[in-house]
Image (cartoon, rainbow, N blue to C red; front, side):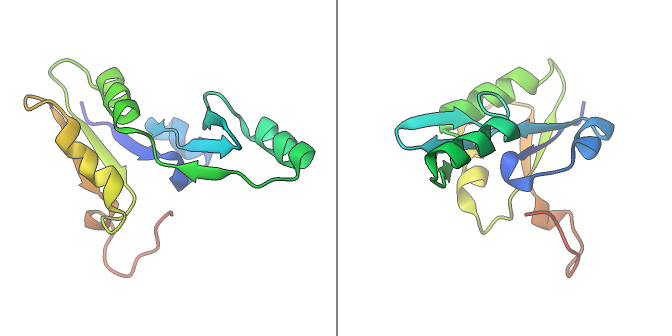
Length: 124
């Protein structure tokens, strides 16, 4: 089974996520010493409430190697495969997580730069 996966930086409309069954690995959002996982621990409404109440803009970070590993383990189906459309390859960290996958993994990561024709607009 082919799966399309992106991270939260793509900020795709919910209609696309639902229509194409796109899986989203959340980015980490840091307000001071508190860390939230996008969409899991913090929705957009709560995000803006915290910004308004604290008057602070948060920092973000990519998912940890452990978060990537757990995410792929959860979505990979037995005997199936999973592809990941990610940030462009010049953002190396997400693509480097391919090396964290087990040797027998059916998961293959594909850079979104390999999918879009040259000169075409993309998300991110």
